Image (tube, rainbow, N blue to C red; front, side, top):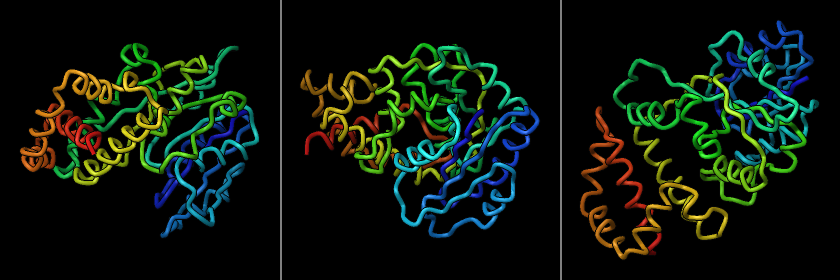
Length: 295
């Protein structure tokens, strides 16, 4: 028995739901699929068809509650004790996706993360940065993910027992920026909740234009600094804040900030080009973090 939970916002999630529904039906599982729209200003008409599927539920929220709260609501209203969360802008390409998760469940299972992959062929030039970052930093095999089981966990494709989710939940007090998945994973670590990693990825479809991804990356840096400042994340727990903290203690933050200020536009030109450098991306984010920290 499994509740498949998908939050969405301005996105046609029906193709994903249809595939998941077919697999769950073939597996002869007791299941439900719940899709909640977080008050999209332009709701996708195709999503209405989810209601026509057996065990399919589609709800449009009357006000936007944010990424953390909508996931908590989905879990709260789920029927079953096993929850499978998927992001709307993903797609299942393995015909045994649902079966693989069910087979991976053990007596002591708490959380299982299936992973993510990106298309192999390069996207249009204006989307290269997101694709390059995703392939290098997120689309990792199990052998790499298990080295850092909590930091390599993403909330776009994971199974969790409902009783475990009720202990964790997503933090609704934080601003609706980024890093809600980081807080979720670190909270699991603090509470000794085990994260299993299996090879059962979804493909990420929602490639953004490079300028959009860069803006969201800046928001992520802002969120990380805020959470470190408020004690929700220790600097040592995330590579970026750990590096910044080390530079500050060694009195070396000044030169990096100066370099960032001087070459910010040059770095952005590279990052928005058809051949962006992830090394420059890391330097750019570090410089921005240190600039925020000095305010």
